[in-house]
Image (cartoon, rainbow, N blue to C red):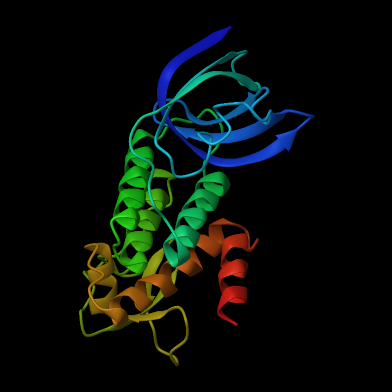
Length: 236
C-alpha cells in the first residue's frame, strides 16, 4: 500500500464518477501524473468541490496500490488560486492537455512540474501567452526525451549559419534547404534564437510556434490537440 502526504500537485482534468465522486488526473511534483478518485466531492456540502479545480496550487494526500487508481485522502490549498481568463485560460488548458498527452503515469518530472507552475504564474500575472507557451513546450520536449537540435547542421555537423536557410527534420535537426520555403524552412538566425529561448517580438514568436507545432504534432502521432480546435472555433 502506498501513502503520499501533502504532495504539491495540480489538477489537470476531472470527470464525474458514479453518483458523488470524481476521477482526477493530477500532476504532482515527486510522483508525476497520478490518477485519483475523489469520493463524495460532488455532494452539495463537500468543501473539496471548489478546491479540486485546474490551475490551483494544491497539497494532496492519497493512498492505494502502486500503479493503480489512488484514493484521495485530503486536499489543501498551497497558495492563492491563479486568475486566468480568456486567452490565458485557454493557454492553461493547452498546457494541461500537453502534460496529459506527453507524460506517463507514475513517471516523476519535477523540472516539468516547476516549469508548469512557472508558466501558470506568468499567465496569471498577465504575461503574453505566446512566449510563455513556447518556453514551456521547449522544456517539456527536452524532459520527455525529444529535445531539439538548434545549433548545428544535422547533416554536416557544422554550426548553423545565421544567414543560411534550413529545413528542420524532426528527430534529426536542421539541414540545408535547397528548395522553396514551406512550414519547415527557417533562417539560421531564427533557429539559433529559438534555441536560446529568445521569443522577443511577433516574428520570433511566430517562427517558434511554427517549428514547435511541427515537432509536437510529429510526436503526438498526428492526433490533434482538442484545445487547438476550441481556440480556432472561438476565433471564427
